[in-house]
Length: 190
Image (tube, rainbow, N blue to C red; front, side):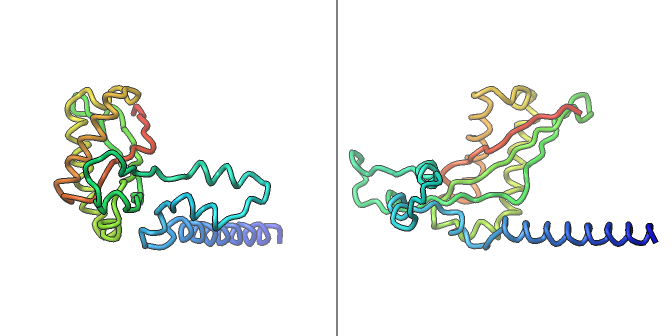
């Protein structure tokens, strides 16, 4: 009898874990609309939410989008100055092998996001395999140079990774991708 109860409890825990994981996955993926990832202008945040005294006001100010200032530039009337910024998050990280003497010496794991305009934000979800292929090709090329991924704390290497990936992505999408954001980067020796 004790074994049956233990088995039933184990099955219930496994099913509950599966349901919970599925629920969390559906929440984290949200909608496939890129508008769900867009930051709202600061004045919408102040009008939509009330300060309930529990620190919400601090969080609103921490998530303000960067405003593009059209003053002082020669592009008066340019529509890009008023466009919203969207962030595209890839479904999984990029894992780049570092090869020495024909063997995998270490792995570099990168979590990248793309800063885009509204004009391409809706197309990125369907283009993810092509974008991932382009980014992996760029990262493997950098991996083979022997120096870029040796020091993941070097600012110069960080900027080299960002600029190389951005340049190669702009060959796939000529406009709309503004920046490559390196959210996380870690190196693990094998």
